[in-house]
Length: 154
Image 1 (spheres, rainbow, N blue to C red):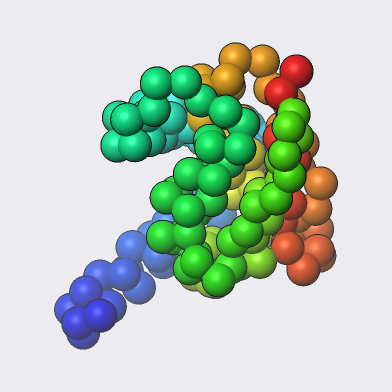
Image 2: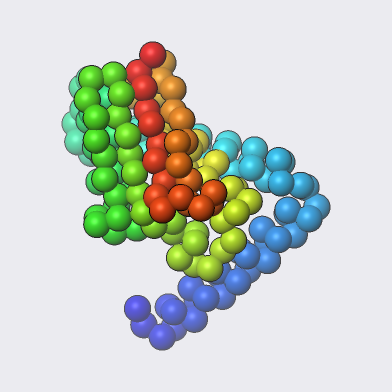
């Protein structure tokens, strides 16, 4: 990354951290989590549409949406070695060992960012498949070594 781009990155990161601190103090954690969840859902809806068009998907399967979420959405942000997926039939898991917000030095204990990720995964899967259930089994914000999201077709 160029020096100018690195400075810009640090500046935006500091402003965002300050913004999050102020929002938490003014609005409260539950409100901020709700906002992050809604943003995640909005992004998830757009992600499903983008993946459907990019990969010319006529009919989704659970395996295909989870594979593309892992490889096309999550891996470019955290690295291909830090994300995996498994399962078959009506249940899949997507797992990642790196939190991009934690890498930027943000305190992830508040779970603001987890609700965003949960919203992205759940809404993309819902738009692709209809009735789904997404459960956060493990979260780095709770001290786990990796985040695990279980996705079930219902």
